[in-house]
Each structure stands twice: as structure tokens, then as C-alpha cells.
Amino acid sequence: MDKDYYKILGLPNTATSDDIKKAYHRLAKQFHPDRNGGDMEAAEVFKEVNEAHHVLADEHKKARFDGHQHTGFHFQKVHFQPYFFVTIDTHSARLNKEFEITFRYIGEGRVFKKPESSSLFYNSSPVINHRMLLIDGGEVKETSMTFTVSAIETGILTIPPASIFIHHKLFQTEQVSIQIIANDCFFKKGEAAGLRPYTFYLHREEQSKTAYRRTYIYRHALLIPRSNYAYFYHSIGSTLKYVFTALGFFYAVAAGFSFISGLLLGSLCGGIVCHSMYLLTGVRSKFYHLLQNYAVKNYMEDGYKAGREVSYWIFDEKEFYFLLSLFR
Image (tube, rainbow, N blue to C red; front, side, top):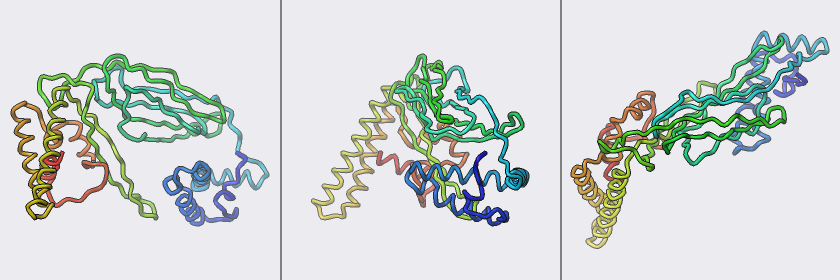
């Protein structure tokens, strides 16, 4: 490769492993995409820094690089045929049930565009993995990007091609299809899921293990199958809660009470009326009963919590969901 990895890290050729480690952490923090608002130039520098660290932090790769530098040669240039393809982990899936789409390419990819379809819902950001392949005596990086997705319509789901530039040449995947079959409504027994699933948001907090302490928030959105019948009564329930909350607020202001007390009282009354309606119609509420959903259980067992952001509550989980249901 025609690159000077020491120069990329701003180090002399005599730099020690500690010097390399410190320079990498400093530059990675400086040019990380999250700190630069998606700036493309910073992202390119970040990739160069990662590549330099990948070589110089490995004793064998560093020795080979140093040896080629001292003799006036560079790494052997590996000639390979780039590829870019897609795989799906199943041939058929139920409506709103998650499945995985994986894209793989070899070499240095740029400007990846995922498939967009009105019938396809992306549940979270992709999981990205790398591995080094040995081709003609040289190492080439293969990247995989796995998306967790759900379908929001039954029938044959056609996934359009994705695209990426590899060595300045545009590559596209083939168009693939998957059979989406009907599913049962979670909120009403005996009903088939319709086209209006309920979106349940989760998040997980994770602390980095590097010298620079950082908190990462992983977000995930689950589609809960819901029939048109359940959607209708959920809409009525939400309206009732908002109306009673507003009435409680105006009553408290008119009577000279604390408006917070009015909001709480109105929300409580709205929740009681709403849940009474759910009992009469046989429809499950949108929050409290979701704790029994197998997909929600699985994610919570993996450390996910409800909501888009980190929250701290003095209530236990079931109390929190019951109180939250009074407002929604």
C-alpha cells in the first residue's frame, strides 16, 4: 500500500507501541463522525487512522510494514475482484416479525445506500463486522452490514437493490424477494394483524471500555402486530386520556388548585375510563400488556429498556408501565 501509517498518526518511524496507542486514541476521538456531525472529510481521516492503527498495533503487520519501509518497498498490492451481494436469513416471515438482511462487500466501500421500500421497516442501525481475507498472499478486508427489519404488508416483499462505491466504481446488489404471511394481532385475540402495527421503542446503554469513557445508546424499534379493531379502540383510548387530562387542568385552574394536581387527576380519570373500555371490548392496553410480548421480553433480557432515551424511575417495572399507560 502506498501509505505511510506513521505519518497518518503523526509519529516518527521510531514510535513505540505506547506512542502508537496514544496517537490513535487522540486522533480517533478528534475525527470520530459522532463529534463532527457526519462531516465526510473527518470521516475519511477517521478511516485512515483506524487503518493505520490496525497495521501498527499488530506486531506481525508492523514488522512487515517496517521491513518494507526500510528496504524502500511497500506492501504487496493485492489484485482482487470486488464483490457486493445481499443475503436474507429466511425465505418467509410473518407480518411485523423481524428478520435480517446482510450486505457483504470486499475492499474499501464508500457511500452505501440501503434499499428503501414503503413495505420495509428498519428496526435499528446496522451491525457492522469486519474480517481479513487472505488473497494471493495479501490481506483484504471484507465488511458485512446486517440490518434487522420487519415487513408491514403481506404478500411478496421485493427488496430493491442496494448500492455502494468500491474503488470509485458503483456496485449494486440483485433485487431479492421474501414471502410475508399473515400474523395474529397481539392486542385482540382472534383478530388478524392489520396495516397499523404499534411501534414500541427500546434502548440499551453501554459504557465503552477504552481509556476515554463514553456512553453509547443503542436504539431499537419493535413492530407489535395490531388489528384494525385494536387500532380503533387504541385511538379512542388515547383521545379519552387527552380529553380528561385537559379537563383536569382547566378545572384545577378554575378552582384555584395546582394545575399539576389537575393534570394528574384528569389523567387518572381518563386512564380508568380508557381501561374500562378495554375490558369491555377485550382489547389489551398499549403499554402494560406489552411486558408479556415475547419479543419485548427477549430484548429486555438482553439489557434493553423501554423508551428512546435513558430514564431513571423510583417505581418497579410494572408500576412504571401502569402509570405510563394512564398518559397514553
